[in-house]
Image 1 (cartoon, rainbow, N blue to C red):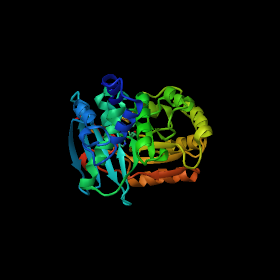
Image 2: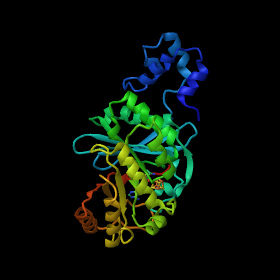
Image 3: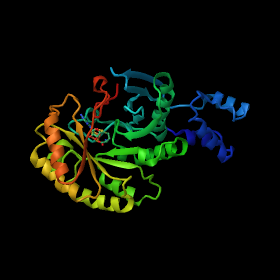
Image 4: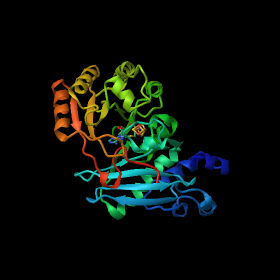
Length: 339
Ligand code: SAH
Ligand code: SF4
């Protein structure tokens, strides 16, 4: 899989550097559908581009939920593999897209449908960028509003595809109005890569969400087999480094916590999470209802979630309960798979 930019350099070694900039910019002009539309390029050059890819997306199938505020698209790339991506509208008509970073995922979390597929391959940056371009093109026909947020909560573990997600984020920051605090990378917590983020001067300091799901090591290991034996200590240490470097009100850290009845929602688990949360400045906890994925789990009842939330609030933590969307079309967190 070769990137558009590398293909360009190979095919047009004598073109000036600004030519690529001009071309990349054109990819984000919504009224353009092919290189032929880009009249800022000379006619002979445009004609020469007829074999040069305009998008990595070869095919798409779109599904919409009953309330028409969530859409899921399965996108097919040139090797015939599919990924899923989701567009959601909130009551204020702002749109969030949820993008995939890999086809499948090797992490094997017990509650996640993507995890059951294993890893097929990682996406290249263009394939991640084009999920945004796909929705941008699709929207005018179906939805009003602007895409204001991008979350890496689709298929795959973004920190196992570090260079590609970084490049895709930089591309969006260059060519869209979406700012750094409106992009969230959700990760299971790949410790060496989390460390790299603190040291990498070219890391775009977007928001990070850690999928914690249990502050009790044994429970977490059972749910998430990728959990290292010293995960909790290392996470605390890393979080201190993170808040020192990036911590401010706009740049808080989030812990995601999927609520599994009887597994991680008891008083014991609330206490463990409260203790961990108190050690980390400005952390926010987002409780996520479990979405059905053919696993032997059940979502905690709303009452249990609210009780769990109260315990954490009493311990001084900021806690929200997420509303799941799109579960009637298998578009909610953890439900995305390859078609
Ligand atoms: N691999 C990354 C990002 C993709 S998963 C990660 O794990 O963070 C995005 C979010 O969906 C994660 O917080 C994940 O734990 C959550 N999730 C997975 N399966 C789920 C399910 N069945 N119900 C609710 N959330 C789920
Ligand atoms: Fe992979 Fe995230 Fe699913 Fe775990 S929850 S298997 S890390 S996609």
